[in-house]
Image (tube, rainbow, N blue to C red):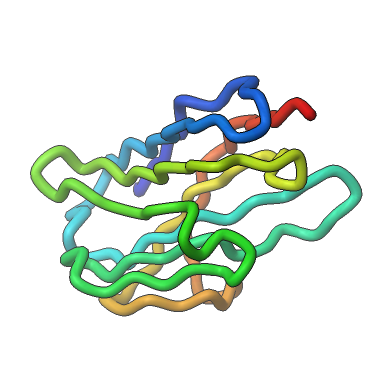
Amino acid sequence: QVQLIESGGGLVPTGGSLRVSCAFSGGAFSDYGMGWFRQGPGKERGFVAGISHRGISTGYADSVKGRFIITRDNTKGTLYLQMNSLKPEDTAVYYCAARNGPGVTSTISTYNYWGQGTQVTVSS
């Protein structure tokens, strides 16, 4: 059974940087497209970034484009999200997700497995 465990969340000031990680186990990591989603206070869970199974293709929400970078290390079974120039509106619980397919998609229903989430808080 695929398991995802996020880490690296915390409290950062506006304009700061943070990297969150997601450890994958229970399957062949390189077979799965991966994504990061977030859910802020009083908001629905939404797409942040996605990456193809071999890391060749990526996609971003407009709100984070140019500030966030998604990467993966298939040798370590780990997904990363580097977050720069953070804003208070980036405050949310960040979730990693895996889907049984190679490509990049923002469609939440296509993701089969989810982590428990890690809290990121950006102070103003």
